Image 1 (cartoon, rainbow, N blue to C red):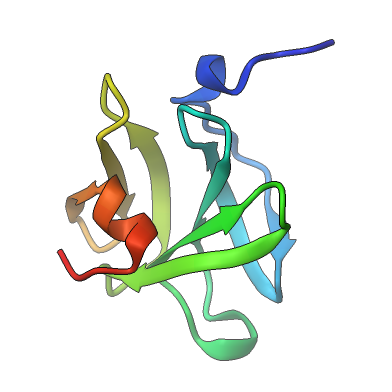
Image 2 (spheres, rainbow, N blue to C red):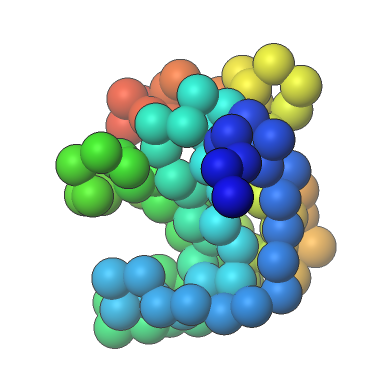
Length: 108
């Protein structure tokens, strides 16, 4: 079955996976399908709880990451149009990231 990444822009699943040594239950494709965003749930091997990480799908490598929450990330979604990535955390915070700046590794 071929599902276009754009149809998965608000996809959320309560399954856990390990990505580069960090546990995540939050995976979302960017609207253009070129990037995968993960929200770390635990400290993993490098204590990255609360970190949003952007991965290049084609190159299968980490592109950028930013810590914004003090506790695990529970949900990720893109706003309509894909300009903002929203992350929600167990710490009770909701952050709206400028996705273009996040991808470029620039601070908010």
